[in-house]
Amino acid sequence: MRNSLRFLTSADLVTVVFLLLLSALECVFASRVPGWTQLVAQNLGIAALIAGLALTVHRRGTSAPAAVRFARDWYLVPIILYIYTQASSIAFPLHGRDYDQALIAADRFLFGGDPTVWAFRFAHPALTELLQLAYSSYYLFFIALIAEFSRRPDRRAFETGAFLIVYGFYLSYVGYLLVPAVGPRFTLHDFAATDAELPGLLLTPYLRDIINAGGGAPAGSADPLAAVHRDAFPSGHTQLTLTAMYIAFRMRSLHRWWLLAVGSLLIVSTIYMRYHYGIDVLAGVLFFIAAVASGTALDRWWRRASGR
Image (spheres, rainbow, N blue to C red):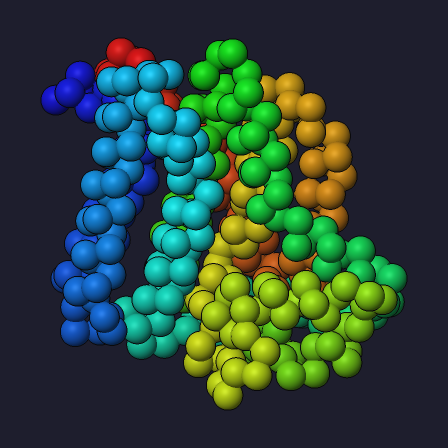
């Protein structure tokens, strides 16, 4: 069985498995998930497409069409966004409630107050602009790393790096499904007043609108709280930024130093820009440690088992 699946990389395998598990969850809780039949059909179709791309490239190698080889490597970028949207959108219907009050209570127990409220004392348009830019650079980290590793002669760096990235993302989505929460910009602060309270210099409002839209609450939403994705716990931005830093230094990426600088600012921005509670950031650190430790072991196991 393992040898028959050896055309799948560890990243392919975990993606297909996660799509199947997500589909099973939607079937079990079908009465709570709007449009579950369409979601399951999409997931199964995408899983089949991933397997088809992987098998084609495995069999034909460099003789496979360039477009197929490109799609085989780069499908990981849109699939991360696709699964994020689905997991964070069905989290609230599955539970019928959010857990923000529990996260707020945890912050007040751990920190003696609300970190985002405390951080507001440092608010300045220049700092806001810098941190909004850092926060918005998130996906560029992974694109830069994957692009660099895909050009290396040894495919192992690409396959291992890609696996640790997507595996980390999927573990963070498990957190969203278990603990749906909207974050402090909706609970501790007036979401509609964000631009007035945290103005930037030039790009901040545009970048903020893009992030809000990507999170399910585009500008002009009649009820942004109802529409926004439940993606506060854990802080995926913290977890995956740490993952990107780890991969960059472990594999001696050309991007490691600027990624360290911008990534550090990004982690600060999760609190300053009101996207996350303090407990979300701490959970992001723990999820990072767990994902790298278990992911490294899983990647090695699959390489041995599949003979890759």
